[in-house]
Image (tube, rainbow, N blue to C red; front, side, top):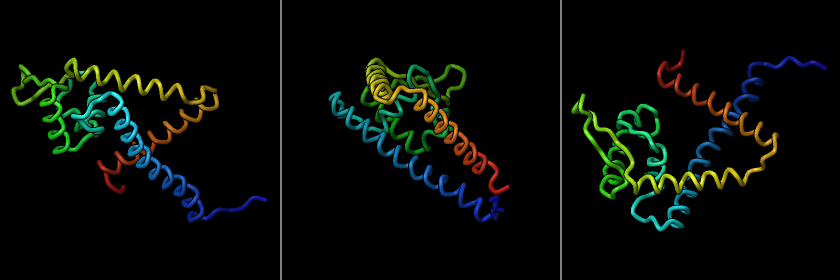
Length: 164
């Protein structure tokens, strides 16, 4: 039997999974930081925290400008400035003024920072290897990633354009 669904019913069918994914994103981020804390302890790294380690991981082998980190949406102004200061003090990051724009500071990982970054890459490879390698799992992960990218796009559009 075919039933006509009201807009309220359609919104419910979409909004419940949407709310579930929003809550899951927050929990996953907190859990991932816990995973990083655990790995930092295993690596005997006690001078930086999980957020700072994640910042190093996101920079990786790239040379970036602080503004790039903010523009990508990874970090907010005062947080990124504080964390970069600490990571530089502890020898994980090197800073260099751009020869073309003296206001712009380029960041790169030092050898110490790269060792930590590689340790996190190894952790990620280990954790990925612990997942079921079946095609069904691959398809489920691909679907989850596409759904989260749609939510990210929705949020980005809302930030830039508001309710349209």
